[in-house]
Length: 249
Image (cartoon, rainbow, N blue to C red; front, top):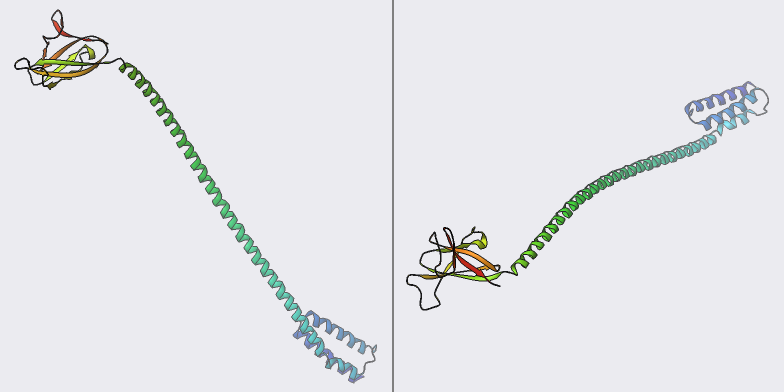
């Protein structure tokens, strides 16, 4: 009986040492609990195991250890799978965040582009309004000029071409009259006389005027001096002496 007790104690101590080395392994602790339970049964006399029978599990405790090692490998493999899954999840989350950030940047860029487009539209609208205003003013001016031109054309349709001649000496000869309110002097050009007979020391001066039919008073300016052509019809009112120009239709 003492020998049996000693063998049981040795077995228990061996298992206790194994438990301390692999205390982190839950499967080994379960096997040790079973061995302790069997040993306790032997000490209480509830088991009929012989010394050889008790020692036999001690010699075969390598099998549970191998099973525990395999279990550890499974646990480590599962743990590695879990780590891989966690890493993939972290990478997926990072990719999602990156894509969300890129989408946010694109949205901001699109918003900025929309604002710029709205500004350009507003600027174009202002330019279009100004252009339409200027076009309207130009059309109005053209319409007014066309009306004036039409009136002028109607007025010109009643004008008559009148040739004025003056015989006299001098370096420059001009003509003025009531046809323009005596405001402007019309310069006359020298010409060769068409007739053989012409006054001695004189030459012919001519100019062409466009006048409406009527009676006008004219006077010639020779080298800055006002003169009346004695060969033309004239009129006198007090000290005023002018030639008469009749324009017939």
